[in-house]
Length: 174
Image (tube, rainbow, N blue to C red; front, side, top):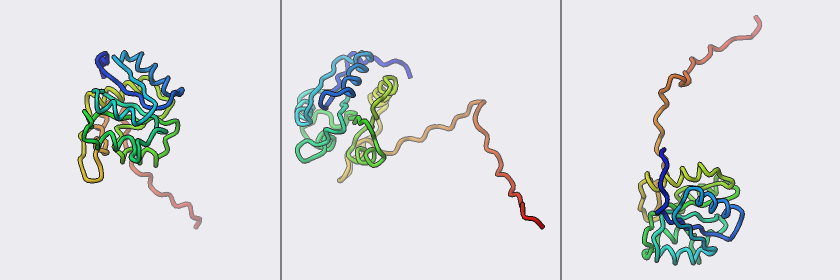
């Protein structure tokens, strides 16, 4: 994937000051993201999403509530939001399978586990902004399609070959 110019991008970071947030901000600086805005509370983040345009949101998994609703649900379903389809990433120190499934069911674009490499972070941001997944609108769900498109099979010269199943050997003594 070619290098993307993020100089006109605006990214919102949501969560209390932490090492993970500092790491994300550093990566955004290295990727030359135009403007990075940091807020500590989900309610303030929702206010900003109603007033300003952002290209992506990264929020700490610990900040999961905005009033009575999870942050992502509020950001996706509130009619006053400028862009309810923007990429929303949650970052966590440990992401167990049930946490990832729960976040996905709320409408998160992707779950990032800290520590994360700068290259992975930039790649995920590029994919989310340039090749976004289609959005699903249903009574109980609004968010990116949870099905990940299948990758085409590798066709190179070093492709693994399937071997025939080994014949069963009978080792019983007669």
